Length: 320
Image (cartoon, rainbow, N blue to C red):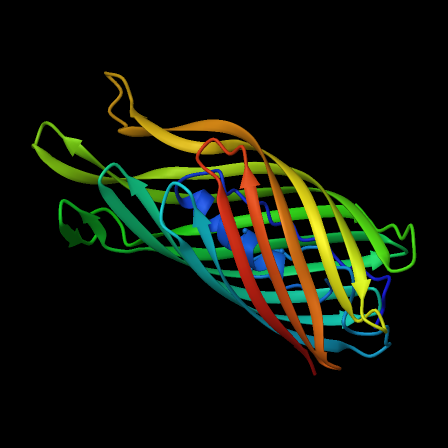
């Protein structure tokens, strides 16, 4: 096991402060990224992959493959919990890696007395590496947000405007690994992510005296600065325990809407609120067998304008 190798820091921007489609999708990416980390994400990568204190595979001129499965939940203070699952496969060769991943994420947008659920199917490809302690990770994601039944006024019905929306994201993270003492690793990183999708809403139309559905354009540009401290445990340093702190700045901390003023008849328009918030995460990587690892993590945000969230996840990785 390479004890000094931290391959790519994922670009998973939590977006946990945001509401609507962009927020839910980014939560999914972050969640998966924080746990599906063969070298150490919203799903990370069904989207990105976050920095890890170790790569489970030794340096080898031949390609090495690692498969992972992750599950967890994002529990927001202001709405219902959102479960997710992710599958990923990573190919390592020398100091670099390539990854493909798929994430399934269920989220619910609460609006007044209506619950508007969505299911996200997100596929991602990513690449990164560790070059003499300098780490980099980049990814692109494409997926589909499938609208569920709108639950309001004691009834459930399908949307009358669309069945779902496309989801697109991309991100990049750069960092540096330091080893100040034996078995200790410190990794500061900076990152950026862009997400675009749409979200489903409803409003009361006074001209018809009934509820009508509409979509809002959801997009967010987010930057993150973080530092992670890892400690190798066990007689051979085969286990890792990490604590990280991150600060997020986004141009879309919360999306609301307003009707365009007359004579404009374009309908509801998105209003984006910038935000800056913090996240603290505790994670562990445990070697169960020579080719099998268990990943765990719990994270909590603070200071988000749309409400904070707690994320918990667990995953398995196997080398073959």
